[in-house]
Image (cartoon, rainbow, N blue to C red):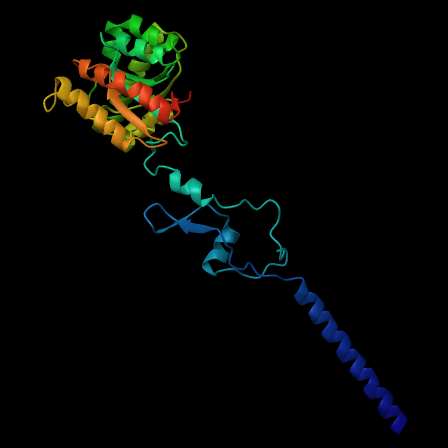
Length: 293
């Protein structure tokens, strides 16, 4: 009798151990989506900005995960990393490019071509400097030969609207599109196959609609970081304007800068005089670049 009880007890203990082992084995096949690092980072305004993530990763980030038999404790190789901090910090939230994105400095000239454009081109040629010209449709129509010279010298083209309408961005989408397309068509009429990869709104009065339509037409909206105000001929003129331009550009240009100046839209003799001094200085201090196409 005693032997029978001992044997029965041993059988019961063995069965209990077997059941415990099964439970442990099942539990090891289930894992949780734990919090994922690098999914959310600081936005440009100092707040938090979520990057696009999968539903399962989103649950983990918010603490709303649930057990999944198919999940692995180690992230799979197909999981994409979050954008780096440097990339998100430099991306313009409004879609407007204001810096070159590297140490290069870009000279940009607006409102031409004009009778002053050949003089500027000659100076750029002398110093082997490439620039970006934001041209106006009616000016291209008036001075087609100077646009051809701009392209022949290897400078970059930028659409600056048909007739420098500073209120264009507030008009209907159809009106904006027609204006930009007409300008591009005129440029390509003079220079067939011309690459026009940039758009600059007159006065810098960009609107979301103008930026979006420019993007649809294959153009990047182009702003600036340095404005010596050579357009403000009511405030300065002659040598006073020349010295103002020189001082402003000298004091504010840094690596990556986009400098705004003008080769059209009025008398640009002061601008030409300023750049006679500035071009060799800038070339010595920085790498001067035409914006890439």
